[in-house]
Image (cartoon, rainbow, N blue to C red; front, side):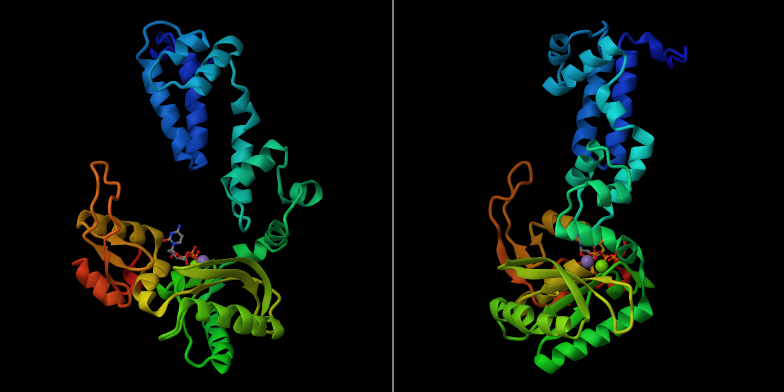
Length: 338
Ligand code: DCP
Ligand code: MG
Ligand code: MN
């Protein structure tokens, strides 16, 4: 045992706490806040006990220890170990987990599943895992998609897409948002915000999906489509493309945005994500609400700050006006890093 004789072992549940702590650290590294919090609460509650908790019934009787955690407490007491912790084979797998999470479209659940199935690297996945079409593309172009795009190349994509699209539909407007609009020296992907004056989102989406995107495929600029969603508040198309003569595939996102919502969409898709969160929080504090469609006022909230009314739209179109209405001095995109 790792008891250090500095008083830690005096707590009757020291060993249980030690193992649960390792589990908590594991979830912390996995960014699993929900489980991390559950473990922290359970550990704090267990620390207050003056007797050794041995059975799951005893454990379950303690506040903040649910059924599953109670079972784990019993397992630790009786086996001096926790299978779940060993299955996670912590150190090596954390690295594996982080790699799997970098594959396009792979989230926490998928990465965990693969690790539980015994896969330890990309080659395992290619050889043994059942992959969807997108997962295969994400893996085959793993290095491509991980390589940052230098700003000079971003400029060339901007020009290429703009020229091609404007030949088809001169009034569509394209802005690259994301890190590029914030002035970054390199970017992970291209976030094209597409809009068209006085045009419904349905018509814009149809032009893009049925004419512009097929044209970009014809020219062999677009290589593959990865995801498409169509919603009232805009739509997106995810894929990959390469400039003529280039072999490296780059991730490309098209975000179709209604003309009246351009300002709010620009704020959202320019980010960064933390800036967005702080702006939304501020809106909330002022009785307003900000999302990628607009700024809303007279939002009524309950005692847990949950929304009771959605509020009325005050501004969607004008990016600067949204800052003004929030009483925030204008922040040019390259100052929107938190
Ligand atoms: N965004 C957000 N919250 C998220 C994801 C995205 O607010 N969870 C917004 C802010 C981002 C923008 O969308 O800046 C574009 O998302 P990207 O993932 O493309 O991020 P960036 O363009 O900022 O960075 P990168 O250079 O890695 O693409
Ligand atoms: Mg981006
Ligand atoms: Mn993106």
